[in-house]
Length: 353
Image 1: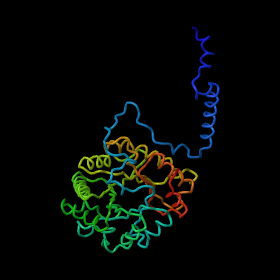
Image 2: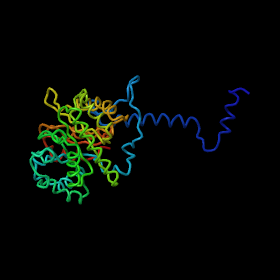
Image 3: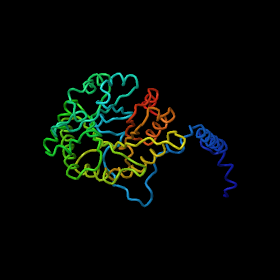
């Protein structure tokens, strides 16, 4: 029997529930048309900077996949890692900062408090290298913040004072110093803001101390998330910082995220230009993936633009940053430097859909 003579029979013998072919064709046309209209309605004006990061290029080496849980499949010991918008507080420069009030006003849940560096006693971390830990009014309000449902981490290192790992050369005393600070403030998250190159001895001394703390925390059934805050340019991280991350990971540290510090740029008209920030994140991604031995590593990247002035970010800029963070599934978003206007902060703390 020929195909031509069989078609009418096929139509007559169509199984119940199967629509006629002309209806299927019409539905397909309608779907394509509707999808095109929806795409046309999406917001424009990002200049292409907020597109997701590219996949690995063909022919490039891909780091071996690990069995670590993905960001949306966290293990029971990983609920305390920062997320969303993380407010950085310079506790020395802003001693009146009210953590609980800021959490209520801005719907912010995570804060980082800096900076703990070595004091005169090389193995005693102090705020700004000079203020005793218990004398800091911001850190002393942590209980109120936690009662309100928020939390805060501690930042070791930074622009003022000597980094503890460089100043304290005794490995046991260094570990004890970190342990004391973490215990005093009940921290489940600590950050290391590394400024400038460090020799391998300092890197390993710090890494071994962190590894010991994380193992102790795991044995006690509590998490201890660890991040590194590093400067980044449009070409990504410096080779020395990449090597530091790799050596730290190989020493046994579970690095939750690498927080990228990047300045806000302006175009020839003085308007904020966010494209260099996107380029910096995309350049840093394969570097971080190789350093941490995990690919892809977008969920291991946090983004922290540094503002020179409160008006560096407009409402449109804030929406672009949150969209970029959400679209690329970055670990969290933060800012440093000048404090954004209140309405900008509220936009930054509002998740992009």
